[in-house]
Length: 491
Image (cartoon, rainbow, N blue to C red; front, top):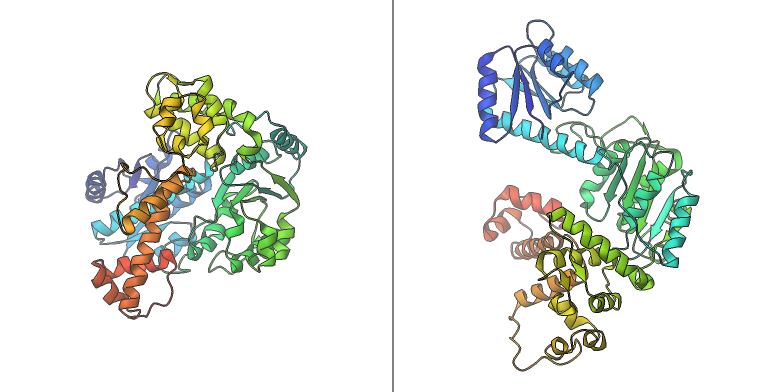
């Protein structure tokens, strides 16, 4: 991470901010005037710029204008006098992230710089498109059809809908479509619409104006603006809330949108690629997905085959993932024995390519020796496999393990009772299926159940519920918003 630059002719203010940020383990670099800071931009850039507004020579407003002309995404915080309204207004008109009024509380100043830092890091992560698309491997006829389709679409800007089970590599195909398109040198921005809470998704897509809602400290660009002239990949589009589908349809229809809280239309020159594991036709029939949006997205459809339909690709994929995992850990790649490779090729792998990749990471870390046998694979994988598949390689191991459909052995340890057992079963099932973000998914469900139960006991009074749960009022208010819990009384 780059340092935070402090520009102020007052040495005492520079010193106070340097020491406060150092306690937060944040690196700083200080300048006594705007001229020296601008000269430093010739060879370096900060993560966040904090500048006084009134200094000898160039003012902070002039510095702000020069910086924004070169680095429009860099958050700039302007330090101004408490009563200087004109300066505060000029700061925002010039594109400042926020202003810090003198005399300021040092903890609030650090908090403001932290927010600007988070915004800067977020912008950097979404705008730094990878130089090379992740490799897509496959010899199976079904995958060759996908490769041919990518080739045919290489010079097109047409909207594409990618369908297929979870873990089949829909984002990899979207990146490949972008890489081989006329927009290849522009940003590729990906957003999983199912991973963003409903209340935040609109702002995430379209951005928001300062003051549009509580916590909107500054204007923020949404994913459509970040993907300008490039490609926006909307994953799990089937889970998009119905009211937001209308806004997305309008963008696809006329190429304009409004930021949340905004009144001026913003033009979007973006190619949209959408993906889903759901049956959109059925969701249209069920009234959960707009039919007009479905037809707008379904211009060209690419269906990705499940790993069950391309079992002949499992060996090449497994070898690729083992080499990749070993390279990341700085160790020698492990090798699957012929029997282990046959065993893997016969598995259903409901998590598809993602599950296979996770398995190869496990093998690299956990399996003993350089040559991996069936008996070295995860126990739950062997237990869940057809008995014939296991016997081919290691009959002794198979004999010692109960078949998936057989009754539990009398000497097997008893499962724990109560909700913990149910949680354990749910987690095991998700992990075996190759699910990701298991901790976050189950954690949100756990918190939602606790808060809803407490609210029922307190007849919807959030303050009383917070006391009963042993958490703060601000915490339960934030959780209610994040989890989309309804029926809460205003205390």
